[in-house]
Image (tube, rainbow, N blue to C red; front, side):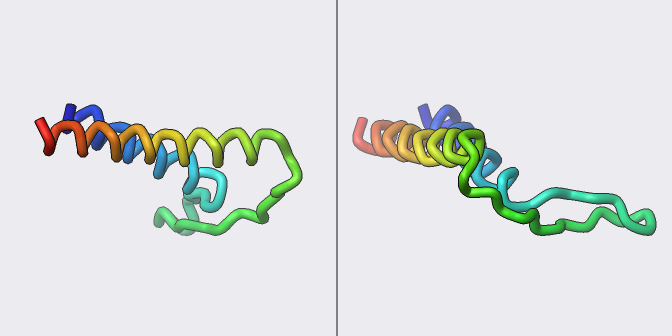
Length: 68
């Protein structure tokens, strides 16, 4: 369950950060560039909700592993 919890944490971080940042190749270097946020779209709200849900599920999975 610990690995599943960590996987959900990583998935939640990916969902949230993929809406805020993008990685571009500039002069043979990978550069993290912030995106212009479009908070009115349904896709943004959906990915944000999925990120939060993944964090919560990961947290419960890790707590479950610690308790039992």
